Image (cartoon, rainbow, N blue to C red; front, side, top):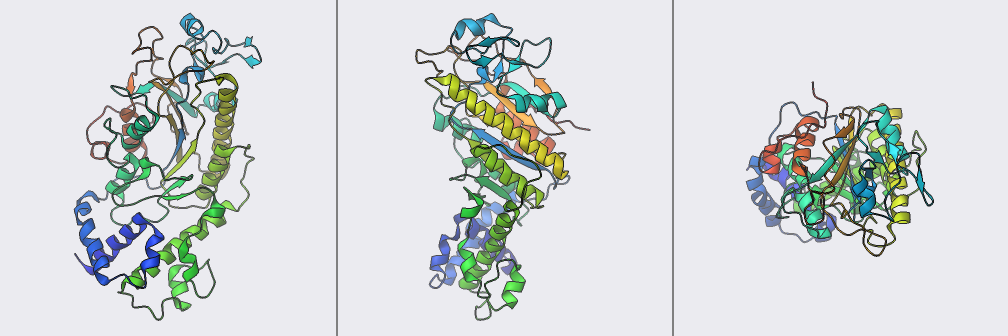
Length: 436
């Protein structure tokens, strides 16, 4: 391997394992740098330039943690079985009400399907023709464990093993030159979906807390200069560029520039008003980074609290309001920026809930559930058929769309990547994205 490639792969290995290596900078032997190149040699074959990759397209993934109740999100008010199965939890028909809760938001005059009354923000996007709902999404032999099912969604493997599907996307398409901010996750932990063999995402809970150790290495005190200018300022004058310390210092300075740029971007006032709530704050952060013109291809945010085993009605109503209003504000922000045509938002949860309510005024873990897409290039409206409420899988809705078919559409029709290589096999693409 050439010195150029060795440095390139070493840098990537460093980013993959984090800046904790900085503490070893003064003592790490040279063999570590040389070993890094050898360790990454097997991955070289995965890197390829994919013709036609739309470099300006951005994917924003919204994870609903805990298992969102799809039946009280996308409501089959035209089916009496729904009301028989959920005498206390069912959402009323459009124009009616139950207790303090209004009826479902009608989507059309034929389907008998409506939205949760608190999803007014999503309903507005549906009416504008920039949002779609994919019904009955799941996978064979469903697992009702939160952790296992989420891992299945993250890895796109029903055995829940391997790297994340988004991580494999970067492994396949980064062509050996990933950037530190190529994938960004907002939250306390970096999701498995974003973990690849080669590049790992930048992950932080808030822009204020996102501060790389590399910032302490700039002797001139400036955090806004690019690496070569900082170097001219004297940071690396006494460092052998071919040494491990030189490598670590360069990488830390690269990371410094990224963290400073993210914080500077988020500090700007957004073009639209965002509502309160954690999801809204995360999407506002993403919106700021997109507006700043960062090269990030995938952003990942999440909203928890969907494990509604008891007293579901008020909890779920509040979550629906947060979800709908946040998605609406984010799309309006993208439109105000002039970026609404290049951003696709995908919303999913690890599973739905059972058809029948439980004795605690809630619902237990289920299987199939809807997914949601927002963007100017989505095929709008209800996609697919709502699962049967009588032909059940051990009391749960049967899936009609494999979630990997949805991933295939996102990868190929939006990200311009070979879905079969990333997912490990060929899946029939779901018809979600408008194609020429």
